[in-house]
Image 1 (tube, one colour):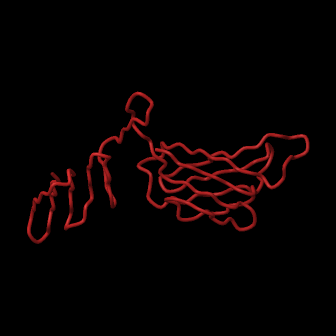
Image 2: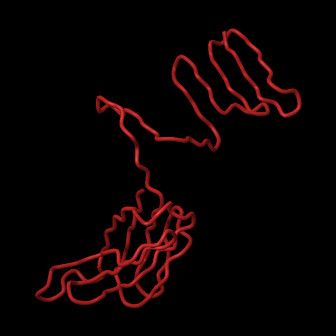
Image 3: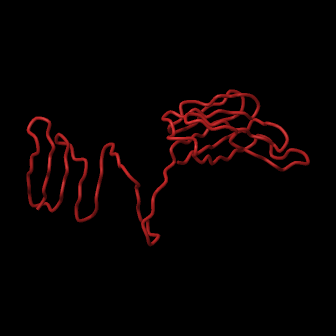
Length: 164
């Protein structure tokens, strides 16, 4: 038997049942949670308070730490965002010097920035050191500098991910 609970803004809480063997939770007639013998489905935008934990076959459940913002951009000429999430724009501060502008602010500046870049030149004579390091953090921006070990360089492609 299926049970449907519908929180209606016009008729209040409405319960119905049939013989399909599922459970559906609805908001104004739209199913937002469905449970059947084959699994669970969640639709729409849902919020979770507290820590989200899951076990993906590793033997125990653990807290999931999500990527709060990310960007893939072209660093040559005028920087252009190729794809992003929670990033409004990139500011070019000079050769190899960029600011990533975050759409929804971080709760504080104690976040982790992971980045990788591809330089337009394969090798700088006598120097193989490359860096893409955060220079300063605010809740809405992170400034990054790409270097060849000695000075700033404009990379061909940059990928930045922010975790908190």
